[in-house]
Image 1 (cartoon, rainbow, N blue to C red):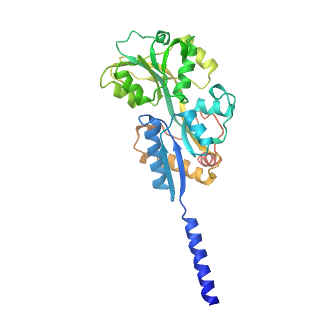
Image 2: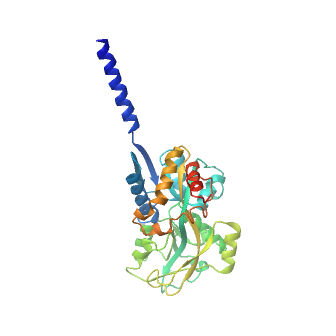
Image 3: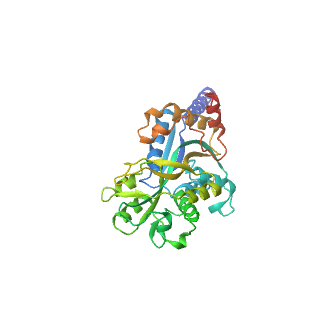
Length: 313
């Protein structure tokens, strides 16, 4: 009887150890709206990770964007997220639109690609500058999104506030529909280029992108250092006959400080060593050569270990 009891205990302990060793790690990943780059690329990256890291389950979720992702991560609902580098820096400092409340419970894994601030108007519109937006119906992105922050700052550079326009707090897909229906005159779209919602608009009408004056750009860079010039080539969207030089920030991948360092190391390693397995067009811009460009907050120890191994940190 004692022998049977011992054998039973050994079996139970062995089974428990195997179960623990094979336990699945579940991570939530905050992205953005369904038609934005964050969501599609996030889903692609999540699949890459799950195909290459055993016992990992990453659930990709839509969200209101950068600030929403950071706040939701602090609440424990996301472990991973895509955010703009400027918004991440504001969160660490509790500045700008965080109203003095510091959110620093996350690390950066890497920078992924430039995000152009695209102010979209109809090709035949009489709107030719930011100042021409006065009194117009303008989509400024969902409240709490990076788009919203950028819209407020660019209006400021032109000596304006939200009170000077009729702001509409729309997602990319909502902006596209409203634009096509003639309910808005312009839309701020901050994303990789091309933006799928802008492409959707061009199925019905040609568009242009507004550019900033030299003084506006200088003000923006002086007061908000995360902006850099980015050229959207002519022909990117139907109706664009000329290159458009617009402000840009960087898309960063962030991770909760609660996530295991070894797991973060593996996430980073797989992302950069299996990039060719991604299907999203942005994979061409996810390279170790630019992985640290624009990183605006503390780098995750696991990611740092990988970058040190390959000699770029």
